[in-house]
Image 1 (spheres, one colour):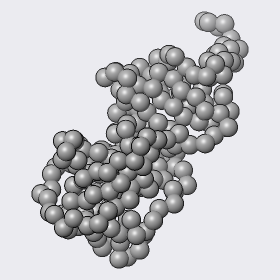
Image 2 (tube, rainbow, N blue to C red):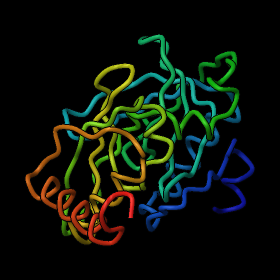
Image 3 (cartoon, rainbow, N blue to C red):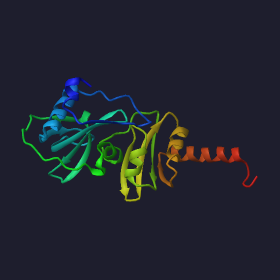
Length: 211
């Protein structure tokens, strides 16, 4: 990060053991957002994603790098909520010059907030095999430990859908099993087939019960 940008930014790097190569990022965008954070200036930015582009009015608080991606932690006054958003999908508009009062960040730590926010605007990375399953775990917990390049969708307070990829269906099934939770509604069919194949392999490895 350029020294001129560092001086203006509230910045954190959070370790993710499934790191992906960093998404290309515009240093000028980082500089504009960092300056708005430092000066406590309201930020207006266009946000792109899978849906229609939207223009947001934000109170920017912190920049976080996690799983190879830059995120902005900001409060959105119009929606009365905190957000974690991919910086590579934000295009700042003209500076507003309007100031705001800083608020306490949820969990008391911007990095923790990013890691536990399931609707960060992520999209699944490209892999030879990609699938999903319903997990019997809260979305905020799965979002923290899911591999980089995966997505987490809230379903209920105690369940979520995880979409991720791997080099093989067996590898993808293995990743799902690392969450040590009940699985349901696996998609596509290859995910379920891989889980059955893993179970058969494990049964052969440990032999008859009680042996």
